[in-house]
Image 1 (cartoon, rainbow, N blue to C red):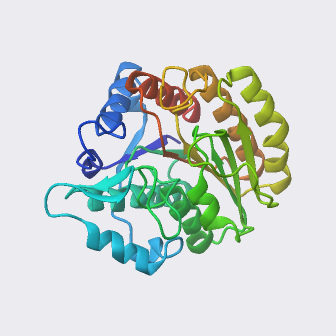
Image 2 (cartoon, one colour):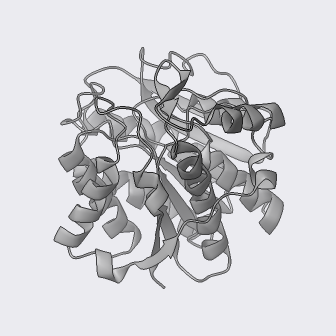
Length: 307
């Protein structure tokens, strides 16, 4: 079975200003590299549908969804937090980004594809139950995980967040939901200045110092995340796939490279093969050095697709 590649044209129309690092060119950089690497034609391509309100309500408060919809501007920009704003197309993009993650779950669970990558924006893992932040409006991976539980009857799912920033929004949403294990590696101390002190049996946070390179990262992942995933035995796995820990990305101070993202992908695929029938959905988060982002996503997808 192929790997699904899910995106939508609306996701390239969301902008937060010409200066903003979370820009439409991120998606074209990924597409360009998939073509260059001759991967594009081997993938199963799907348009991301708009998310349903009932699907958002599994992870976001109704008042928050209403506030986001009311904030959508007819022209110009409107700030949701100091780092996150909307233009007239942002609400549509956010709905399709979350809907793409839901579509990915459905495709994988129905056995139509072996796994899926959701190439949509805005990203999601900083969005809490009732707050937009850190470039994120709706928490796409949380919407997907909740959908797997509610619509497909799964009892245990796990999210592996390798973005360089802590997935604080995902933790906020699932802190009282033991059916969801969240494993998050992140630079600390660093934005959003959370996660290092979490004590929760199903939240596995691994703060790492600035300057962390592939060797120490792999050691920490092997020692602190893989055993917990094995013990949890998830029936489906999700990636919050942020590539801003790449050594070329000046958003942070990690020193990861493409080979490290391949390694992470392979280790989680091994867990999925043993416990989840290979079921994986990967959802794009960060990554702002365009060349490094495209190369890293291509390496990640090549590994998922076993090409």
